[in-house]
Length: 151
Image (cartoon, rainbow, N blue to C red; front, side, top):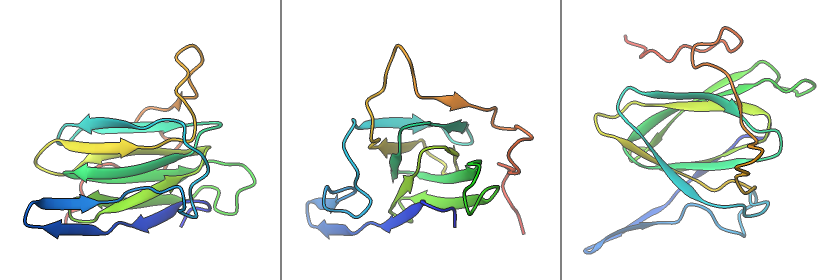
C-alpha cells in the first residue's frame, strides 16, 4: 500500500426506485478541503496515464463501468518510494480512492462499456498554470504494464 493512499468502501443503498451511493463527505477522515468536482469518461481499452499534482490531492470514484487504477509513488523520502499499486474499481467494486499529491496515477477502462469517473480534488483547476505533471502511459520511469494479465 502506498503511503497516504486510502481506499474507502462505498455503500450502495438500493430501493424500488434505483439506488443511492454516497461517495465523499466532509466528515470523512480523508477530507481536507473542497476544490471542485468533475466527471470524466474513458472508452473501453483506453489508458489515461500518467499524471500527478504538486499541490492537489484527488478523491476518485468510478460510478459506471470498471477501471484499473494504477498508482506509483515517485516521492523522494516517502516510506513507499518506488512502490506500485493497482486497484480495480467501479460498479463491481464501489470504492473511493484518496490519492495524495506527488503520487503518479492513471487508469484504464477495463469494462465493455465507457467508464465514468468522478473526482473531488482539493484544489481548483488553474487554467493559466495547471498543476499537471505528465509522463507517457508507457514510460520506463514507472514499472507498470497496462496490459491485461491472463491466466
